[in-house]
Length: 388
Image (cartoon, rainbow, N blue to C red; front, side, top):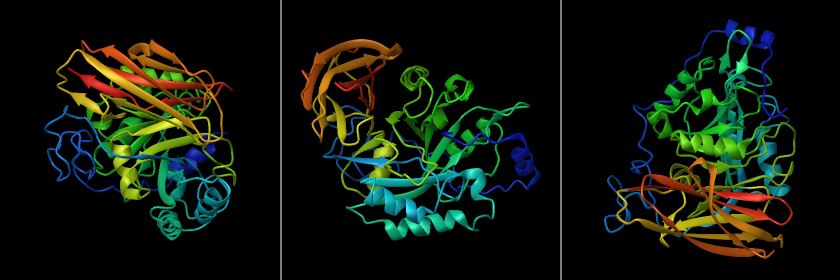
């Protein structure tokens, strides 16, 4: 079972508890597109003190970044998994061979005083003990899962939350209330978890809210639903999300359950750089543990960029893919709104491949690259959005 599906008796027990309301602090949501909280390449350079973007397209994120691989959706005995966060961090490093490991136990169960108390604080203590900046990145988040259509308790969707100082309220039966909590947490970053795992796990068909979009930056491909199709459903209604592929571990197999990986392009392997990459949506998903994909616009704008006030009618998109253990690539494909296949390139089974696509930009649009390996695995890049 990929995510908890709370039985009615358990929900009755939870609802019988006092509704603990623990805010995450902060005022209105941070504008994820103006780089107010970032310290790397800005989206419009209005608020930071790093390299100015005045001489380039507004929203073009530039920089030198390297790929890292991780698992950012996993559980321990602090909710419905096994062992402790410390065990998860050690196993993911030593056996799973991950660069990044983030434990995300279920929010509702983190409040319960068993198998231990103060689980949120203890997870962070164990993450701090395992964290080796530049070598191994560990942290804790949580998974919201109490959104239901009543009275049948049909889940409306689960979401991970990263970089929150505090837990959100224990129970928020209406996912719109969860959205409000996310939008009010300036530092928080949200993720759509395993979309389509059940019929209603689609957040009311990806109902769009601009203020929530500032913080909801990630989209999981792992799960039982048609996630490739649903990714475009989310993009087409307005969400600015980039792809992830986590393991959603409920057993002691962190990083080793399968070869699913969430990839990030970071300046360095630190929490600060991971935060910046999440805010700038510089991620990719892979079904291969050591494969990577990146896409650049006009040689300098990284995937994840939201380029505004674009002045020309064409864009040059360069896609590069790599595999560390020799698995070959069949094709690189370029997609646009409506999951429309715009172009493709033959890779001839090589373990490295690159392609350049020149596309028209006549109205607001986005582009997504997909790399298909010869063994059937595939990778997906973060989109690049362009608004003339």
